[in-house]
Image 1 (cartoon, helix red, strand yellow):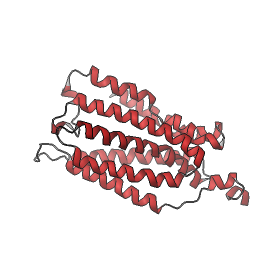
Image 2 (image 1 turned 180 degrees about the horizontal axis):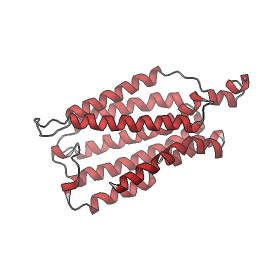
Image 3 (image 1 turned 30 degrees about the vertical axis):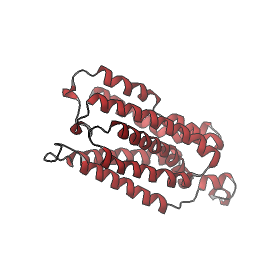
Image 4 (image 1 turned 120 degrees about the vertical axis):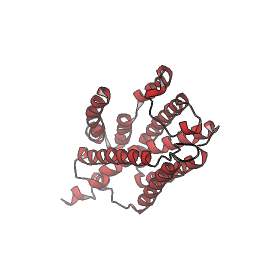
Length: 241
């Protein structure tokens, strides 16, 4: 608990500095790559591989989605480790790609449907003896989900310019943390104590896929102007001022 409190107190500083750090110290052609380096969970990859190996008492491990279907906590931990690795790869790829293309909206609309499809697939493949299928879907899910992080961070800075970078990223991260807490509570409440198997989370997976589907719709409805890029080109807000 003490470690969680210390880590939680430090995380706003590391998360909110991402876009401000990139815009202050890097040129326009390298901002997304710089933000990618800050956002990637390189240290967490090692931790996720170590935790399953050092955990000897499962009494203190919270119930996870896979355990009602006969998977061990070590298998669930290994899946999480691979997911972190795939997420880091996705985040690492996104930075250079965005810097080269500046196609924020395009990649938002390409990646969000993949997140939805993989979330939806969990409802059908989270079954006994489906470890390989779950690993494949989870790896894809985390790759595209983490790919979206630099996309959304840079896009928020673009459309909210000339608002400070740290302000927009702070609001986004705060919203993500708030909704993440709410979703965890809701999904745990949807655990089916009388289902088959007992304590399965099929309803929670449907809820999760529904949220991802709503995000896809919103991503295609988004048509904000890239004010920062327009200002750099001399055609935007700063030029008119």
